[in-house]
Image (cartoon, rainbow, N blue to C red):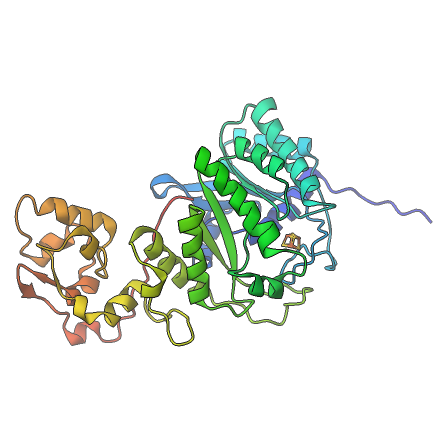
Length: 395
Ligand code: SF4
């Protein structure tokens, strides 16, 4: 008996390959998932934060979801039973351009599972990118994924065509990667791929830099190990961003019984990461507990301040910029405004300080203003949960 197999249409493929692309993080921490959903009219459009906090809509898709890899956490793993589909380069380029020209999306995020070999899969993605750049004249944003084991010549080609390159490191060391994947090699595939991109980036900067992603909570790694690794990536490989992806168990994978990572943990990692990149902190200064994890009940900057009472209070009219940005409730923008404002005269009232953007309720226990201390009244603070800050920044 003959079976008639219906081939999925391009739109049906887009639904499948756009949905699985969500596992590659490039936008909001998952604690803001609801905020993200507001922007997500279609399953393949994902919000990211662009320049000056503007929300940009990424057409985020896999070229193909058939994989020879068997990562324990992944929806696309070889041994998982689900529908496999693939775009031809022509089909995907045409589809993206249609959405772009209709003003539905602002940029492309292109990745793929690994079928036959990393190079074979990259060649298909690169053909898509070639078509976009040269046939359709697309000059917009492309975030392009380098797959583990891709050869150097293909990385060079991707570097020429994309605005941002990323390669997912997945774990902070080889020891933890083996708990996540039997097929990826930490050093010969991941670190060496990242090293090649970083070398090209040193010669001529990628417009939107290099990023990576770490899966959080599936391999029992600590926050200290994660953030020490991120710090190394920022220092040695000049990464633009490390994205943290809170582990979510997927039915039909070997890790389906492992509890999900709380979104708050992922969020605290983003906050600590921000302190490393923009506030001059080093991993050793972060307020890890005895298990090597960040406190969940307050943000890491407040945690650091509480552990270093000898550094406070600081006098707003005398402290330098670096001291100011270490005060809870004072960010880089308000610190800059304070330094500029002092040229015109002293700050004497809390109201004047508030006008610079300082969150007075958070800062007041750590500062003096013209020699005066304004501690929060105990009743004011009672039962007040520590406000969670989110640092908006570009993709
Ligand atoms: S290589 Fe691993 S993580 Fe990547 S798609 Fe295949 S199974 Fe998933």
